Image 1: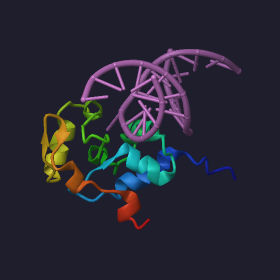
Image 2: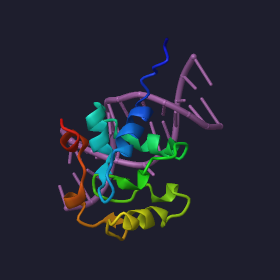
Image 3: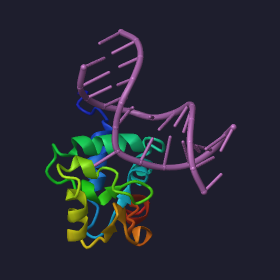
Image 4: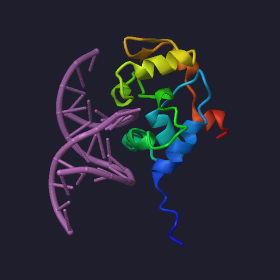
Length: 112
DNA sequence: ACCGTGACGAGAT
DNA sequence: CATCTCGCCACGG
């Protein structure tokens, strides 16, 4: 028992894995979906450990402004942008273009 | 065991 | 409109 630590980290990973290619979401959106209304920091921190997980497209997770705040955690400061562009997401000056248009809200897309 | 820090966000001043 | 503070949970020193 006690196997379920209810670590929000695992929950975050589950949501991030569901982000479709060409879409992006924000830390707050995931946090809100999980019930961590103000725990957006936790989502970002989970991403920091996401590199331990194989299928975590953390590049699709940006801050509320659409800024690539975590680009420095991809090994290379341009790695995150490269990955997003590879997904068909326009990025310029560390900011996602048409962010509101490609924004993927888990509460909305997963069927709140 | 205690304190500080962290890929954020929203509200208050 | 810009700046500051608090809240959230987990982990490092």
